[in-house]
Image 1 (cartoon, rainbow, N blue to C red):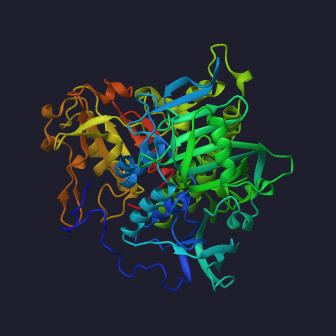
Image 2 (image 1 turned 90 degrees about the horizontal axis):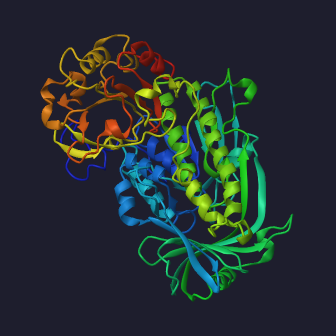
Amino acid sequence: MQFHTNGFHPGDPDVLPAAPGCRRAGDPLPQTVDVLIAGSGPAGLCLAAQLARVPRIRTLLVEPKLGPMEKGQADGISVRSMEMFQAFGFGEKVARESVWINETTFWAPGGSDPLTRVARVQDVPDGISEMPHVLINQARVHDMFLDVMRHSPTRLEPDYGLKVADLRIDPAAAEYPVTVTLEHTAPGREGQTATVRANYVIGCDGARSNVRAAIGGALHGDAAHQAWGVMDVLATTDFPDWRMKSFVRSKDEGILMVLPREGGHLVRLYVELDALGEHERVAERGMGAADIIARAQRIFRPFALDVKEVVWWSIYEIGHRLTDKFDDVPEAQVATRAPRVMLAGDACHTHSPKAGQGMNVSMGDTFNLGWKLIAVLTGRAEPALLHSYSGERRAAAKGLVEFDHKWARVVGARAADDGADGLPRVAREFVANLPFTCGLTIQYERSALTGAPTHQRLATGFDIGKRFHSAPVVRLADAKPMHLGHCIAADARFRLFIFAPAGDAGTPGGAVANLCDWLEHDRASPLRRHTVAGEDIDAVIDTRAVFQQGFRELDHAAMPTLLRPAVGRYGLTDYEKIFCADLKRGEDIFAMRGIDRAAGCVVIVRPDQYVGHVLPLHSRDELTAYFGAILRVRG
């Protein structure tokens, strides 16, 4: 973590200096904003936390509820989301507060036993990520995003008690083309409205999204016609795996899932209830918490379950739905119009909670969108960049909905579907789908943002289009062991990782020095082309290097000036750009990620932690072309 760059500031380094004139929640609503976000769930807060760090972007976040969430709803955090939390600076805090899911067990009738443990598997495969799979109350995730917002220069907070009632778009307007009608929801103000004009509106307002309806969108899909109950409980039981993630299938009473929660005592139960008729809704059954408890007790027999307190409960029907498009631009107008209204999270895709992906994919939506909005609103990129959001994230959501459609039925599979080895089908499918449930299978298709795999052989462990798979390194300047991916902050910058060829020590005449000299000084360099005069050299593209030698074999002072740049108003040296393989611990990033030792390579990482391209060290034209297709020429 770096601070004091522009002068000494005592106190908490996570609290950034406030920008002049920043608006406070509760102040009169502004007439115009750059971005209006509807909904303060995971998608809305993830986006707001990114925008809040940019003082020049005016953001309004509205939420119909009267205050922040306290309990209930989603709780599973995939390893991919934990990697994202690290970029926001609160990954370690989530890891400390949460419960780690290390093992998953499977229970079913066996022989004369009503229930017996029939399988157990490691929940996160070795080497797939440095992060754990954890469970934590969704409200705590909200709290951490809210802290980032409150401590950012804009001091952004949600405006509670407001919802988007309607909006209209004027495609011909150059500024603030979206007129939004907001409706108050607080007691005594119900039905009162206000109008705000915005450059962009992001609908994170759930499955019944008014934003989606206003742009003519609809969710398409089906339902499983099966009621499920979910409840967070404090209970006593003699079930042996109460603190394990467990799938329990009884002989005649259905299925439940046990999910231990943070704090050592709280547990969430997902409980199969009744099948529903073709046109029947869950609410028509009139079921409540007592029905969930009773069914759970029957499924658990012969084990006892004594519920002392129900913290939260809900009954729902599984649905798998996806909207046509994630923005407001008709297909016929894509070439002539840029999006002004976009959807994220449940507003554009819904699914069951069985795979634990809802909150994770929703945050993934706006982590993808946030840096693109920042690039456009700060003048770094053309508005057409925003078309890539719908293209990339709808494909990711489609994969999730299709997976969840199958997975929900796997969870409900009966004994007849078990294999010859006696393992439940759910256990076999669970193991086969671990990379998906970890959130690591998304691979963006080739585009301006995702290069061709022409040079993938130079770094076979950094798949182009997939998330950057971090690995251990040692920072040269202070010999600190760390993960390379942890230097990627959620700050909307691209990363350019230079992996040195064998024998290169960064000295003049070597491949690394030659590339750095070109990047820093040549007018064709993307650093020169896309960085405004007066900005730090790494303001848009952050260049870092990794060497094969141990840290004692290299001289920091002999490195190219691009790797030890002068930054901030005092021109202080940045000492955190150069890394070495962690030879002491035998964790060699070059071997772990399949990097060509003889040739080295350049790995471009997008601001959302996805690999944009892999190129040879000498590929100047391809490097220039990649960034030129995304960013404006400003140098």
